[in-house]
Image (cartoon, rainbow, N blue to C red; front, side):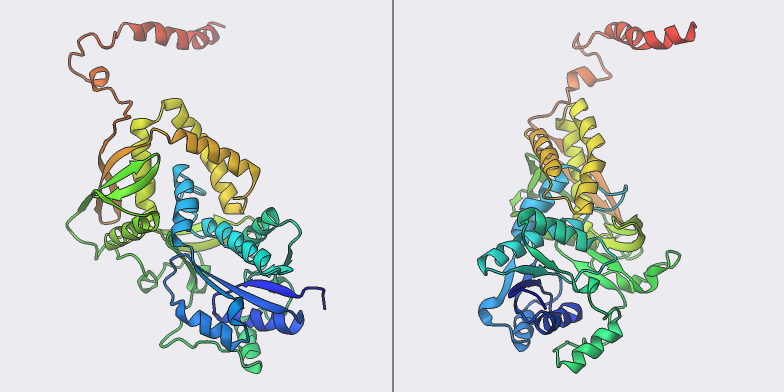
Length: 402
């Protein structure tokens, strides 16, 4: 069918990518290399190797890689330096994982001399855009195979029939199958489909996996301290932790107190609206605490400029432009702003709320002598405010006299 001899497939071992693997072998008559990224997802990865072997993949062509530290250090942390949030609520948990998967997939394609890469994203969603923009940015001549845009297996029933017909090993989970399409990594877990397709339906309590309900959250608050160094958390309660360990611990702390649930109707890049539910306990804490650290250490105009640019940055991440020159330009500016964002933030968690109860820094711009309501001993001359106000009122006064 084509001149493609070898393709690297982003492979999870689930129904979709298991069917895609066989379909690539049959339709393209090519050798398949599988790549599975461990980004901290909950599901068991040990069976992926065996499934790939059972599908005829050579051991040397099976790549299962632990990318958790790189994911948090080089993708999640830089994004949180920007305080990025899409459409006022979404912390971009799925979006930020895609550029790393694309990067490593292309690296494996180069190493194995593959002609193409393939993914299991549908033709309706954002992920196809994110994967492919990343692939083209990193290797402009790469060929991309998107089965969902080519085949006629457009339902779960058709895929199950194809799997049965071709003897594809598809694991049948014990008990009731989750009715949701789910995606998980160290930053979040997402839920789509099923009853959620009607925006009026309330999510079932049984759906949530990482967080307790507010009703079941502890009656006693949890206090802890986060140590920041140039915009990134480096320790929790004085314990120095790696980036992945920081996020893992914050997920646990936040989940125990009902932090980070979100039910959202969002605007997909491809043009449609989509309803999704998300759990981002650690990220919710990080956003609140980081803004608290910046409130003490950032110049006012720098902070306001960052806030003005943040929606643009968030849209770039959401739409798949992580590798674009404009995102890199914004990142350079954001990272430069973080040079003094170091210190400690004290946080209280209580029944779904993240409450900052204290912040301190050796780089603080808060001057107690000037800000005090008591006698400041001449640190600030209040008479200066009169001229300041009159100058700023000048245009208003002129306009009023017309």
